[in-house]
Image 1 (cartoon, rainbow, N blue to C red):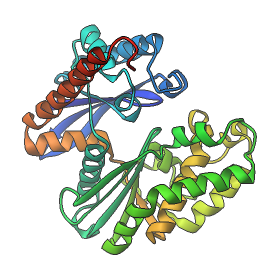
Image 2: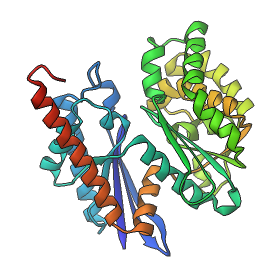
Image 3: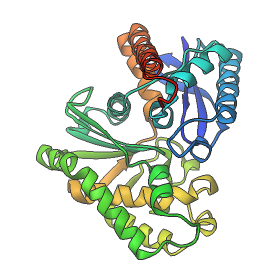
Image 4: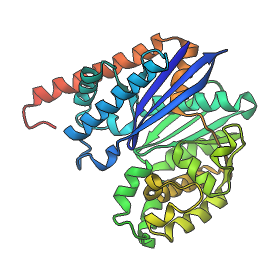
Length: 336
């Protein structure tokens, strides 16, 4: 069987096509379409008409690509930037009408659970009690568990893109006051979650997401050309030094650093501050970098629990979107 997953995030629409053999998704093709939705939304997070049309074109392109690779209809979802958009219902409806692909959204906690499952399957049972940190453009997911799925999962508004827009207003090197304000925000937001993780005392900490992968490379981890099976980790003290390096440079110069790409150069500093602060308040000195994340988690959950699981998720998303439409109409034309 060949399956495919599409996710629409703050920067790109990404497609993964994989063969399922022995319960393991083995990628055969990946593709991405640049959107930069985070730069094209309204002040309240509304996704505008132009961005919405481009998203639908990208999702349609992903669907055509999946068919060329003989995969089943993509399992499509939007991440935090779609989930939190005031016009989320319109976005989901428009994409389905234009592409025929029923895109849904997942709650932040569900994203954390799925990413945890991917990390657990990648690292295996020998990892023991596991804490996961996954940072995206709009949110930070944290999960802890001893088994296949986490016992605790949380989603916090600490995405690298979101915090960059909120705290760093120019592309020059930031002022120390801006960095201190960002650290305070992250520490405050993580206070309760960090207390839970310290109490659980995980054996292994794992990081996922492109932002953490790039920061790990900056901290000395093996480059991507060494393949996914090369062990990669990041120490907290090295991440602290990386913050100093990133903060001393304007955005355009960060892209010349090892691992940091131009599209993510602006948000690399905020991502580093979130990662370092989270590791510090949770008492984590080192973390393993996992190449599997949310897309692999979706595939694994459908493989292990059957396609009915995804159908239920999509139906719940549709019901919520319809409810938002009903509430907006009831509130009148001035409702958001």
